Image 1 (tube, rainbow, N blue to C red):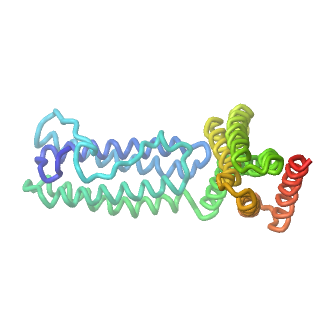
Image 2 (cartoon, rainbow, N blue to C red):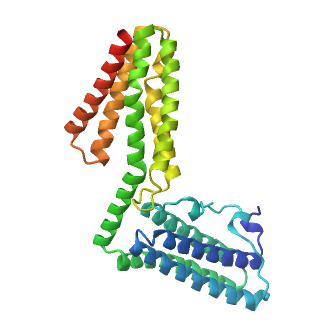
Image 3 (tube, one colour):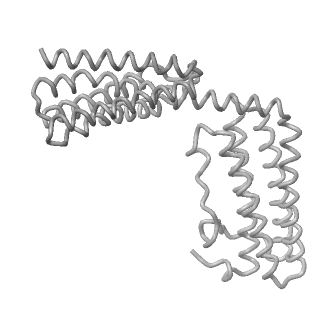
Length: 318
């Protein structure tokens, strides 16, 4: 990588051309990623890509006048100081908040680049164009707000934000909650049955590890294979399966780890306290994201957990 201060005027212009082309393609990628679920927001980014294309055209015209037809390939990651943006194709599915933040940071960075470049060039025409583009980027930020207002009136934005929240609940919260409930509740019976049957914390720990990991693997495959997301909109099955499996394992490990404590009653008391905390967390998630009344969520989850715990205790004490 080279320092920005070491670049020649020719290289600065080449870098500016590459930046505008990259920004335009990023905006186009964002637009295509949003088009199915958020068509109004997609229109915003399509128009912003058009703005970047015009900037690139003006830079190429000046470069040809000054340095000829060949434009060397100099990109952001070749020069120190630029922000490294994650490629859009790696952050699917896109969220409205993330792409709006990305666009704002890109415009701010580009404006700063043009102002620095204009300050260090000695060629009057290059200085003028770079200064004009710096101002254009500032105007572009305002234009972006205007485009948003034109394409995203308050009711449309509220509708798209609500849709984004539904997708988040459908693709992340629901599989995560299913895993956490399964891991926290279904593993209670084998863990506490082993604990009360042997009164040996280590034996309960071994059973808990096996139950938690086994349940995590089982739930991951069950979730991933149950629905490919094409009709329900629940997102990529591999991602859902990974979320469900991970949360299942975490749910079981929470009340398994206390059995590393050698004293049986200390380990058991701590494990029961953690179970209560897990059930409270599940109730909170159901209230926060699933629109379940808090009292109803607590009663339902608490009753199910108590029933499974008593099953394990009765079997282990028999």
